[in-house]
Amino acid sequence: MLYRDMPSFDLPDMDGTSAIVILTGAGISKESGLDTFRDADGVWSKVRIEDVATPEAFAANPVRVQEFYNHRRAGLLGADIHPNSAHQALAKLQQNWPGDFLLVTQNVDDLHERGGSNGLIHMHGELLKSRCTECHDVEACAVDLSSDSICANCGTIGSLRPDVVWFGEMPMGMERIYAALARCALFVSIGTSGNVYPAAGFVQEARFVGGAHTVELNLEPSAGVTAFEAAYHGPATKLVPAFVDAVLAKV
Ligand code: BV8
Image (cartoon, rainbow, N blue to C red; front, side, top):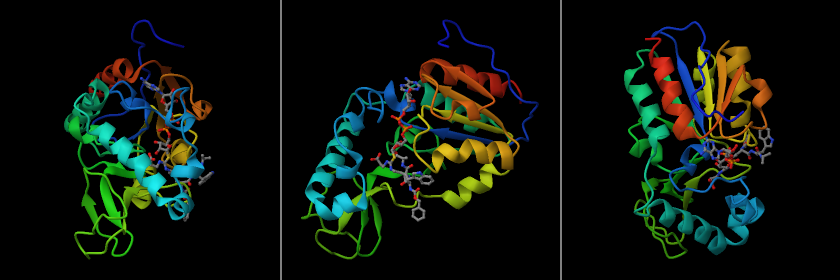
């Protein structure tokens, strides 16, 4: 249900020593002006995953794949793209929560960092980084990549790719993520449709391995909504700041 005024969040019995894990997806960046993937006007309504987001696509047509990421990288660096109050609320939670806190994002944008978060795991990589397919060196990248790009580490020409995780590739930070899920008291999934694995399975891990209270904050019910003990639906910039204040009241 969409809330006209804020819901009262039912939270578990927890205190400042409890561990929290937050998972975010493209929905948290939507109100900052970045497209989601599976909404009606989303990224996958314009291009096919098979053409731009798999290793096979990159091998078959590197120019097309590089252009797809060059366009998104330039968009992210646009003057009109800023973190929103949901990003900022999660940074406030991290700063004020005494217990263990881990933010995991599926997003490849840097809006969590620009909103004040740090130490987060970009499990699907980062748009503003490049990786060399020869020496595996990863560097900050704010420019277009092409077959003329030169690796700053090994000097190879044409070996740079976006440092993102394509379908069929192993997401990043999985060991650290599963260790945190196994001992968290609160798991919150924000702005994700719950379609992409292994991220979509984290709620089960948190609930049945970690014994966590599991919460979904999303514009609409996700594909995995029934796995959550509590679900609140509305825009992230409304729900997340209020939710963070409710959690901080537990300290
Ligand atoms: C892997 C690249 C294994 C960068 C992306 C079961 C188990 C394991 C794997 C699989 C499995 N079944 C299938 C697989 C394979 C596959 C997969 O999940 N396929 C899906 C399509 C079925 N998974 C993989 O390939 C993963 N790798 O499993 O490797 C392995 C094991 C051993 C050895 C090697 C490999 C890799 C997955 C990563 C793929 N890369 N991105 C990029 O281009 O961005 S995924 C892509 O989807 C993005 O990263 C995105 O973040 C991610 C998830 O999408 P969402 O973030 O949820 O975005 P979406 O648009 O879907 O939803 C947005 C939501 O926000 C909506 O619900 C909307 O209502 C809401 N919203 C909108 N506005 C707002 C809002 N909410 C709040 N406020 C608002 N204002």
